[in-house]
Image (cartoon, rainbow over all chains, first blue to last red; front, top):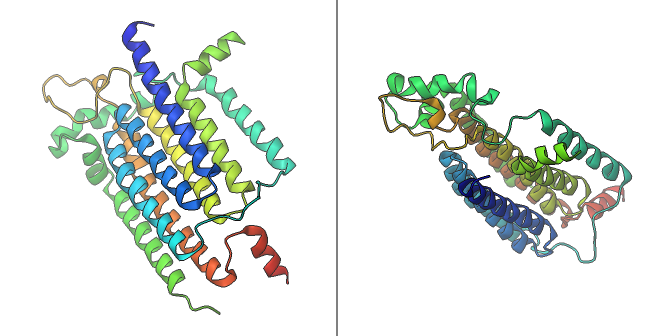
Length: 182
Length: 125
């Protein structure tokens, strides 16, 4: 590995370590408001990692929707309920969990050998359909941002149905919150 | 065996995905507190999105915003298609999170507790 590749690798690994630490902290902290704020910082580190991988639009969305809106939802829920979990409770020990989850992890590690190498430009997901979007989007839609042109132009029905999903979930949340206590 | 460890070390993002995914799944199954269960659900969602964004990365490529309409090479830009699909997934994930948090508030109004064991024991009475 030359020096630039090593620097890239170290930057990546340090971001990933921060991700794992904040993901662990968000669950281990007893105070629920603290846990939710650590989850917000996890979202910001995730956005940073994605921006570093070249996915700037996904990073913006995660920073706004994931770190902002999800944290606000969690905090609103905590203000309407209790901000602390009950003391002296550890997660239950159940044997299906302690057999099933390591098995699933071993399976995922086993199939890792078949996945393309990290950052390989000739991997199957990077060669079949996505070069067509990259080559034709400026000609077809005159938008330099390929993500925007695919989202709003080539796959606009996808986005339309997505707004239907958000509308439905908004109605569902409103109906649940207006429900009279039986 | 050494070869397999080399394969894992060359895919650090995949190892992180597996760790966060299993951690979130474990918390969803085992934790008592409903808010902590939802934090676990959020971790599972974002870890899967993280995996897809990792697949879209190309080493030496820049962000998928075209700056030159001359000789354009797809190798120069990151794969935009997983980005688009994951934008949708992030927003839908937060929508499901909102509905489940509303459900948690409704449960709290009924049972005055966020603890799974307490709610179950109240239901059995």
